[in-house]
Length: 154
Image (cartoon, rainbow, N blue to C red; front, side):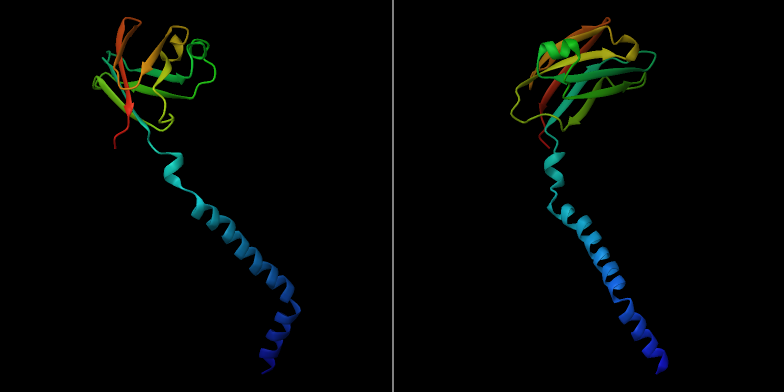
């Protein structure tokens, strides 16, 4: 009996602290759960386009870099890039490289692209306008590159 009274007395004496701790635990849980319930994970990272690049592999591996821009001037000066894709092309790789893209507005009909190999060749690049749905061919450092961007069909 005496033990039970001591417990009640401790609880009564420390009720403000206990209440604060319980409230903090509840608030912490709400801060974590409520934003996750309202967040639509599919809208922000929805795949909008498919990028296919054809390039023959060499005896050594190399990086192919593609950055996307809204204008020719931005691409030539390498400013205000929307996004970029880097592809490692290995000697045993296929000629065709496909990536899904989440960076483009579905209403776009074309983009400007800056293309270069490895960081050593950043001064040697090409700028292309890519119309969606049409395959575009170019040559950079005697390597033929074909690019196709089309809406992602799932």
